[in-house]
Image: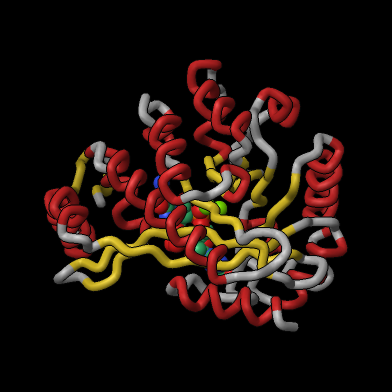
Length: 285
Ligand code: C2E
Ligand code: MG
Ligand code: MG
Ligand code: MG
């Protein structure tokens, strides 16, 4: 970090940030081969109905098993993949893998209401011309109904989105794919703008969930969540909450009318079989 004092500028070497820069460079060069070598894997985190705790589906969260650095979370490499363009093939791989997984769960399960799969989309994938055709192909190949798939796009990716950007999302929504606005409430978007977006689910940002941890919760936050939920429901949108870590949060968010939830309180992200077990557990009571 550089500090300036008076008119002079002093550069302080920061070994930690140097190490980070070196790792960043190393990771960036290793990314393309990592996909070919099969170093990425996906963990699944259940989404549950707040009303009764039943498993509704799961979100696919990508990880990188790096030969030297061990397991890296998406925050370490997704920005690099976006920067280098690898996010397009990586994102397609995540989609294909998770859609096939969702189909496999459905085949193992004999339950009412299918397990759904949520997959994150990067803004770069939205502008890539192959998005709609790839998705159609992947769903058809796996034999998964489009309405079992939910694509999560961050609110900030859609701020000021023009029609060209929204077109592929509209096409997917018309096919029955659910589009969710991820990290909702952090992007300063105009609420009236929601009507323009082909979105059926709002995924409330973790910061709201965190403020429900204090008891009594901040009355302003309570009012905000209450307002978002009632607006969402009046527009026929479902509300999911992320980052639920305690029963108290779950209870507060249930009372506020949120529909589904995700968080460590229910389960951490884990291997596909873990989700299968969880879903099976509540199918058998
Ligand atoms: P996100 O889509 O908002 O995913 C939720 C993040 O919250 C995940 O972090 C999840 O592990 C974490 N989380 C879940 N429950 C809790 C909880 O109770 N407490 C806390 N503190 N955290 C919780 P993760 O796996 O590190 O992913 C971070 C972000 O990386 C995701 O945020 C998403 O934006 C992005 N990401 C993950 N997989 C993909 C992918 O395949 N493609 C793209 N483009 N982005 C991805
Ligand atoms: Mg997400
Ligand atoms: Mg999120
Ligand atoms: Mg988030």
